[in-house]
Image (tube, rainbow, N blue to C red; front, side):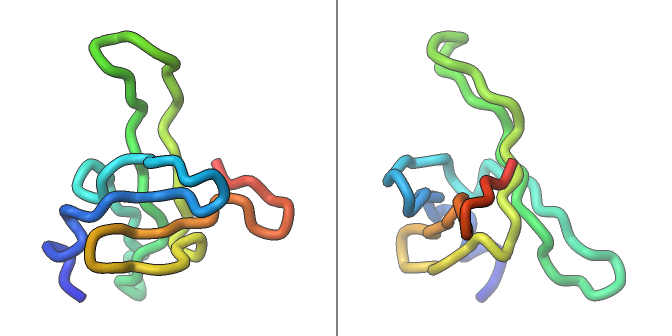
Length: 84
């Protein structure tokens, strides 16, 4: 799969069904030696300064469960551990 194909996919947390953002809004952390993706960095979000603000969300690549035609399903709680 090409990176350009991931760009328009929504990121959904499988635990609570929450839409976290779009893959195109993230930064990728790539291992310099292997070239593999280590994690996605989703910037903090708020709508016009309203609503609850969050810090940058780090989604480890190992938390990605499925990449479908329109969305990427992630599991941020794995075996009792919450990624952040």
